Length: 145
Image (cartoon, rainbow, N blue to C red; front, side, top):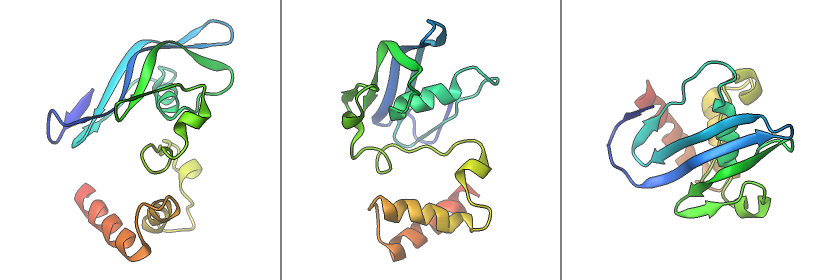
């Protein structure tokens, strides 16, 4: 489930044997596990409705109110997080945890260049200053092709 650039990097985040259910008891994810390591690129691939978005939302603590973590746990930088407790995610979202949804129209403004939108995220979350952000974004875009 992943393509590695540098195998065996530090564990950054994980879903450990998680089961997510909706209010009607239907399992949306059933004993799913995922590990994200530094220096690696991980792809979640599956058919529509297989739980890819739910896994991402669970990792970010953003499950909709109609869903809950029934079993397993979420880990970020060695800390076990409780997805139903928003205060545990304070300061993590945007800096340490972020998501870009697959629908580009929901994620990006077609009237603005992609680079400036990525720069905005880095500046808003205090990751880096404007001049540093622009250089970093250009470097990453070049790296990604």
